[in-house]
Image 1 (cartoon, rainbow, N blue to C red):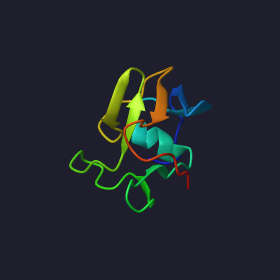
Image 2: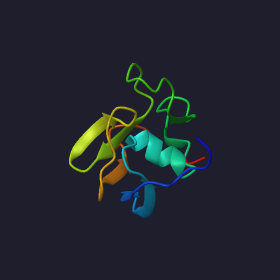
Image 3: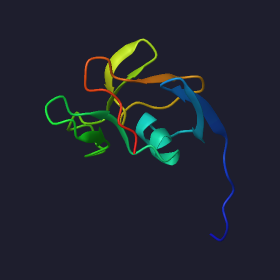
Length: 96
């Protein structure tokens, strides 16, 4: 298939900032689509954390989404109007 047509986009907020991502992606996919590669830091070393395994085995990609705390961004579908935040139960934000 040559060329591509951009599909519908969803708008979401991450730590108060508005972003758009293609419909049907995970929260991690939406963050990555906007150049956000890490969204928390390790509690012990302060090292940046984001998507690691991408299949829900590890817990590096945890974020808070709407009213749910510490969900895996790689497994959580991104929906229109989602409020995504650095997880309050883990290390703070480290964007990169």
